[in-house]
Image 1 (tube, rainbow, N blue to C red):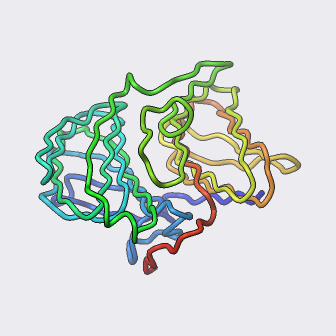
Image 2 (image 1 turned 135 degrees about the vertical axis):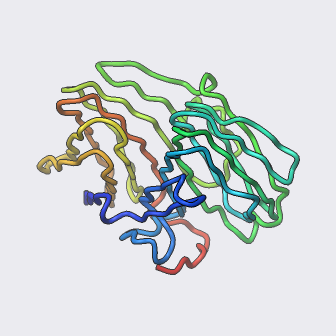
Length: 257
């Protein structure tokens, strides 16, 4: 298996609302500085933090499936479907943009979240009516075992059942000295962003461990099935993982680098 570690200097950056909201983007748009702009149907990944209360006015989306995951604080979502809802710590909001909608976001100081875009087959997606759903933290399954806590965002037991794009997501916390084990099937990609702790190591069968630090973006790909061990070192590690197919059977939007 191939392991690639991209530090913050190889990820994109963007500021919103006059710098009140700053985003580190493992996957971003052209010209924003990201070495990698796409992994299969995973199209965009921003880790946003609000230094002061701020927001973004109404802006359009079409086709993509857009997930926002609350990490800290509160954010207000409004859209042209008539929705108004609060995203809190541990919640997920899913917008399936379909034929098109607009939404606006306003956040408190200290708000922190991920926004993740997934790409279904766009020729079909744009024919569907847009939808918005808020899922609360308590709805998601969690497992606690041998110093590892795993919250399943997408996968077995998740309340998110209507996502079209093929993806699995996990919020993983690992105690120092413990390890999370992930089995990756052939021709799948595992992407991880470390957001808490001083880092850890990644090990696959027959290979030496590869170290990573806080804020690093890890990409693991392989043609054959394999086991990946993610170990925490001196501090409790929190890493968000997304697994997607390395390639899909439908044409993908050609995003410029």
